[in-house]
Amino acid sequence: MIHQFKLIGLAIAIISFASGIAGCTTQTQTNAETPPAQTEVQTAQREPDVVYVPTPQQVVDEMLTLAKVTKDDIIYDLGSGDGRIPITAAQRYGARGFGIDINPERINEARANAKKAGVTDRVQFFQQDLFQTDISKATVVTLYLLPELNVKLRPRLFKQLKPGTRIVSHDFDMGNWKPDRTVKTKEGSTIYYWVIPKEIPANLR
Image 1 (cartoon, rainbow, N blue to C red):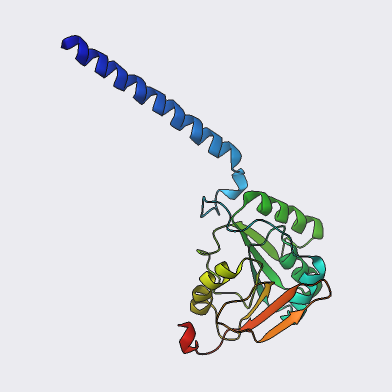
Image 2 (tube, rainbow, N blue to C red):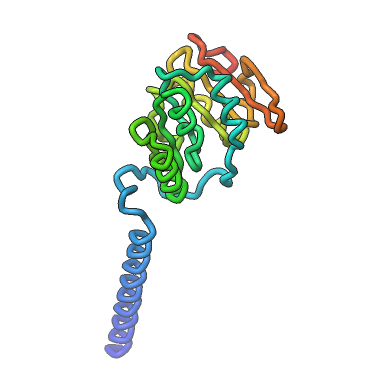
């Protein structure tokens, strides 16, 4: 009986030791894969909601034109990818921009692109979950997500954004929230445009 207890105790010790090694290995890999510069802004550790597909530059230009962006605007691009929307807004209109993306590779790419474009004084990119990001300072919000994600995001837009804030989405609408304008581009894309109303319609509350 004593020998049995000793064997059981030895087995538990071996399992605990092995678990400890596995835990240390996982932590080391996570730290190594996370760029040190991003640690202060990370708010999420989950897979991206959508596969990254960049918005064509011609569509970016039309989105910003439709939103009537000026130097006084603050743009939040949710799911910012390589950063081309905030960067273009800063270059062409002098607007300030913030890009939000959950993928650290995209954030690094966007920051490099902003530096190359010479607009790092006007745009910033953060690795964050767009469903947790404070967007209350935005005057323009740009999107290229999916229909179900737009609908999921809609209550947050109504809650945080001031009346008059413009929202522009590439290719996907907001469900029951009908756009103020819809534009078809020469490239075959659709751009949807909304303005946050003073009062939320009863069917969207």
